[in-house]
Image (tube, rainbow, N blue to C red; front, top):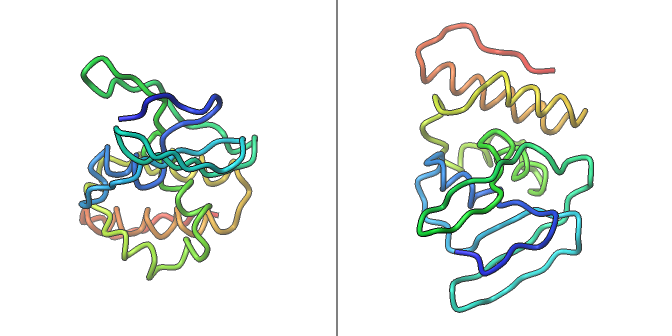
Length: 149
């Protein structure tokens, strides 16, 4: 999938969400986040984009076996969603979050989603976590929605 990663980066956003089955679409570009400069690599194996985030946001990832002897640092599902919201202007808007067509929300750890959002102290990420949490709980048939922040 990726010839080499930028040091201090991990796969995130739609790429990680697709990897976990949280969005239905195939994602043709592998998006990673890094504290380095943004970059785009076009390789015989595919296109890789690196988006810049602040050092304090570089967390919530794990070394993941991708198969065929490949490993990469990949954001946990909750962090991948929050990275996407953070990097997308208006990413916390309900219309945008609905357009993602999030699925399999039972695979998200809602407490971890809220904890990661709270760590950033970002109202934008807290709103997104609350929206997704409420949607996940409704999908599970739970009547009481979580209020984050």
